Image 1 (cartoon, rainbow, N blue to C red):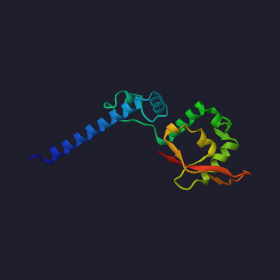
Image 2 (image 1 turned 45 degrees about the vertical axis):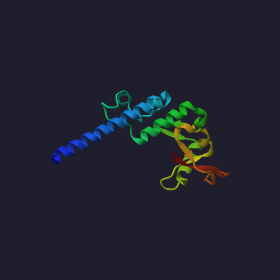
Image 3 (image 1 turned 180 degrees about the horizontal axis):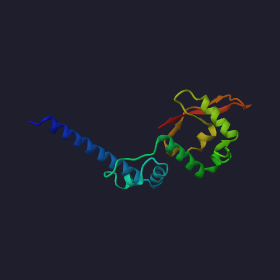
Image 4 (image 1 turned 90 degrees about the vertical axis):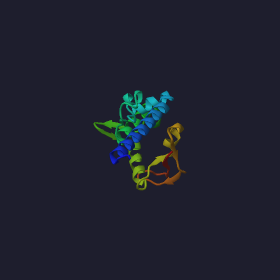
Length: 155
């Protein structure tokens, strides 16, 4: 009859084997799309070492804020027309009309929600897995006309 330690050891072994299989499948899926692989590494979603040998190392990712920041920086580099006129750097601060609008849109979002402007929605690549809710108009301080915004929905 198996002891409690034997059962625990067998359970931990099964969990490790499942973890390894999931890691290998995730790495294989990423490796099938070179652009997705490059993006995942560049923004810190996965570590190159893990991707090359998923069973030998745990998945290492950057923090969520750092991943989003790197993704946005990369997006601006690849599509400068989307945010090219957004702001002017002044020391460590960003200033400009679009920065003010972005801050006001963020303030208008309900707790736990993310709002995007219609031009941002139109510029986002559909393959990124981001969907948008229906547009609605809101009035923001400092703007004469209403602004079309929509909720961001993660696929």
